[in-house]
Image 1: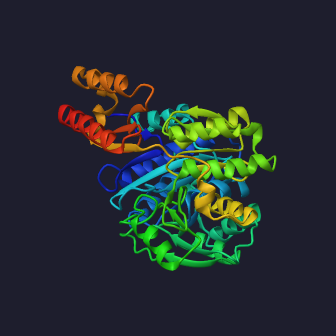
Image 2 (image 1 turned 135 degrees about the vertical axis):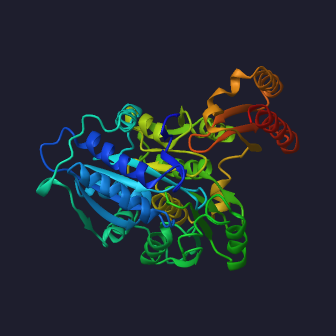
Image 3 (image 1 turned 180 degrees about the vertical axis):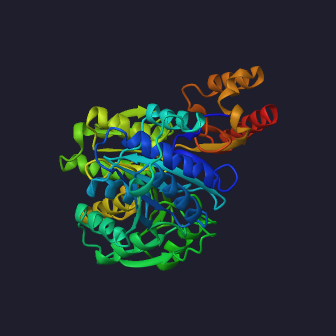
Length: 449
């Protein structure tokens, strides 16, 4: 059995890889590890996205929490960043989100936050995993009045909306905004927050039924929102993913504005106002080369981490950075929340538009995006870290690195959450990099299957 925890919690097909039994065990082990230093009866907050398996897994998880003597507070369907924020606000001992983010409905996931709203370090995840593998050896299961109980709260999403509005209180009354909620956790919070700030909101994919989350919509399927922004003659489009911790925007011409571009726009605006700590943005190795060229031109420092918003966050905490994120749209405003936050990202971007009076297409031109090709190779989960052990693959990667040296770059990495090896090539010729990326992905897939 490989490591349970990936880059964003425990993920898998619900009721197959991620079973109610495993959810209960994660509740038991997680509650024990996260709260074992406490003298009081600990409390853990639990929220989920809209997928149908959320109820099944949340209830199993909370049964596990209660079985080790901790209490659970269930806040229902809320964005991931809401759980991070509310965990801190209510001073509970930990938070848990049941979500598989941008993945299809059959997947689900369980990710933990500590009492300060931060994702867990690897060592703590390893401790939780070891307890599960050792059949909960060492955990005491209380009886009688000492078992835990569940409290249900329906006001949590309003608290999160209020926090977001107070963090970035911007007048949106002159803007028409198309919002794609991905049939997910932002279907209420993002629409209500934008309306409360005066925005003229056109909401799409905001009728979740438990089975349609991320289905040809949201931040990983941008075709519809691009067309809708142009049709509506809107100022901007905002696309969230299933758990609303990421944002991808669309300008008034229908062009995609990704996480790198959003960070470039907001980062430079923050720098001009003296609000960007150390004039530094923390980004990952996946950020476009154009992002680094923009930083050089604008006098910004870019700190680079490996892929995963948790690693961005760790570096931000280490150096005291106020802004960091990923090309995929996970953007962290550390003074306001401790994880990627789609709604906060949207409000900050809208604030730049309002304060500068410039359309998003003009703001986005601060950065030239170099052509990128990203192709996924499907490989067995247990093999995905070992791709360089295959001589043919290692040789092909070496040749590509030589070919693109100085003209672009080649980045190969296993997915942290799916049975995939991702092949990314940047260069000047889109047709060439598309062909090379596909050829290498096909090679990896054929050899490793």
